[in-house]
Each structure stands twice: as structure tokens, then as C-alpha cells.
Image 1 (cartoon, chains in turn cyan, yellow):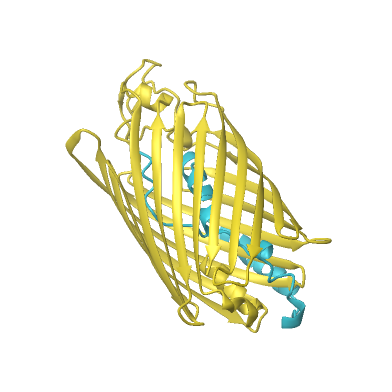
Image 2: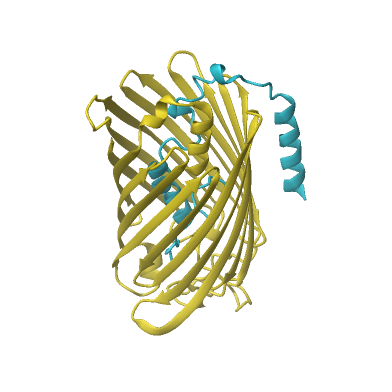
Amino acid sequence: MTYFRFLLLALLSASAGCAEVKPWQRELLAQPKMQLDPDPNAALLEQHVYEYREGSTGGYGAGGGGCGCN
Amino acid sequence: MRLQLIIAGMLVPSAARAQVASVDVRNGLYQDTDHTTINTTVVAAKASPTTDLKVDGHYLVDIITSASVDVISAATTAFHETRHEAAGGVSWHGLSAGYVYSVENDWESHTASADIQQDFNHRFTLSLGGRYVANAVGRAKDPNFHRSLDAYGGDVGLTFVLSPMDLLHLSYTAAYLDGYQASPYRFVTFDKQMLGAPETDPTTRLRHAVTLRWNHHGEGDTALRSHVRVYSDDWGIVSATIGTEWVIGMGAWETGLHVRGYAQNGADFYQASYTQPMRYMTADRELSPFIDGFAGARLGWHHGTASFLKEFRFEIKVDGFGFYFFDFPRLRERAGVIGELALGVSL
């Protein structure tokens, strides 16, 4: 339940401050460096490094494939 | 990646859609002080046969050589193995589906996933996803050892355009694992003797992760890309991750400086050495309390042309890292480096 409360609170906070940004105001947001995952291959290798060596996974969208780390 | 494509499509109406296909190759070399070396190569391709249809795929190979303390404590010598992974995906009008197959000598897995994204009045994008992973676990040189591990996962994400310079993404991921989650190669110790009994991890695990990502376009051609994640599961592990990258564009060149920190406690049933047999026992250092940190830099270059090859690009990336294990006497510290080289072309 703690997670859902955190999620709801963050969602409401973000929505409240979310003014409409017109399409012609989105030039900077369209740049590759502003994308969530500008390079999927780099993210794939990076998340694999963490998943093999840390006790927690998830939350970054890169998924799939067997860990194969037994 | 699919969410990236959706957002890019939402933000750039026409000009960027001239690119219809690309091929990228990336090689990474990992080496640490625990005598482990991993060479990873991934070849990826994607294409847009029509404006709304996108297909992508990759082939990845991991070549692993290790003589880590895990290997030595299992009374075996160093091992050398290769893992192959092939993946494909398709997306159409905000709907996407993917499949991943991974195989090595003692592990085989199939992953199926489906996602949907919907934009709401250009204010935010909602994404929902689900995935199922079927794993077959084996043990080298033991044809009679067969175990299975199924994983069911789902995630919900919201991406907000906060301002002309700020993008915020909030996601929640849950996963439920059911099956064999120990290692057939690791043994717990009793009263600090060298060998004891096989691991006996619980057969189910419920995991939760909440991640907040914030991209801010700064002065000039710069951006700050930050993220924070909190995680917990019913094995008792709670972790926090925080990281940021400062990206600086310089015409055709782009450099990024990044740092990431991670901390977790141990699983409820983890002990460095057991005094007596227990229902659940593990010798997995990834289930012990530890902290780690990564820091590094990357340098990229791209060049557009008027020919049928629309763009060439390359990137070089170097990371250094360190781990400190608070309750794993066989390995207190681990440090290492990761180097990557990437080349790509767009048609």
C-alpha cells in the first residue's frame, strides 16, 4: 500500500504542475538527448550489468531474456 | 524503446520520419577484480515499413570467463561459457509486442511481452505492459538436473511534459516469480567451514519497483537526465538507486558524464554462515547487504549525408565501478571497468 500511496501522490503532484506545452514549444524535448531511452542497445547492456550483480531489478523498461546467472 | 518511439512520434510530426531503417553494433568488455571477464556484442536493427508500423530485433552474445569466489567455493575450476539471445518486436499505433529467446549451456528462457501506449491531449502518455518469462534451469555436466522458473510481470508508466524543457516519467513495475531461484553451483557454509549444503531459496518472490525519471534541457545544448528508484520484495530486500547524466552537445559531437549509486539490505534468510540447517538458506552475495557505485563518461559522434546512407555514428564509453559487501566475508570489495564501442548507420 505504501507504494500505491507514493505513486498516487507523485501522480497528483505531477498532474497539478503539468501545464499544456504546445507542439511548437517541443523542439528541445524532441532532441535525442531528451528521450527516456535514446540508445536502446546501450540501455540493454547497462541494465544487464546491474541485473546480474544487484538483488533488485525492474523499473527501467528494459526487460526480457533469461538472467542466466546461476 | 517502444515508449521512446511513441514520444518521438508525438513530438516530431514529419521531418524525422524520413529515417526508415538503421543497424547498430555495440561491443562491451567487462572486467572485475573477482576474476570475471564478460565480452558482450549486440547487433540490432529496426525499420519503419510504414509511418505507423515499426519492427526491430537484435542478436546478443555474452562470452563469460570467470574464476570468481562463487566458482571456487563450489569446488570447481574457472568456467567459460557463451550465452546467445535473439529478440524481435513490432509496434503499430501504440500497440507493441515482443519476444526474446535466450540460451546457454545451463539456462534457456522464452520471454513474451505486450505493451500499449496512449497519449492524452499531448499532456501525458500512459503506458501499460505485461510480460511472461519461462525459464528452464539446468546444471553443467548433470543431464538429470531440470528445474523451471516462471516470471509474470506488469508495469504502468506515465510520462508528463512538464514544460518546454522538462520531461517526467513515473513507473511502477511488479513481478511475480515462481520456481527454482537458487543456484545449483552455490553452497551455504555451516560454522564457516568451506562446504555445506545446497542453497534452498524460496520458490516464490514478489517484487515491486517505483522509478521516477526526469530529463531537463539546460542552458545551451545540454541536458540533465536523472532517475531514482525504490524497490522491495517479499524476501525482505529493500533497495534505493539514484543516478544522473549530464549530456553536452557540441555540434556533431556529444559527451555524457554519468554517476549512479545503489544500496540494499540483505534478504531475511541471508546469513554469511549458518549455525544449523534452515528452511531457506543462500550463499548469494546479491542477497547480502551491500552498496555499489558506477561513474563514467561517453563520447559520441554522428554525421549526416545526402546519400542513401543517411547517417553514420559511433560512440565510446568507459565506466568504473566498486562494490562493498558488508556481510560477505569471502569477498568484501569488488571493483572493475566496463568499456563499450558502438557503430551505427541509418538508411
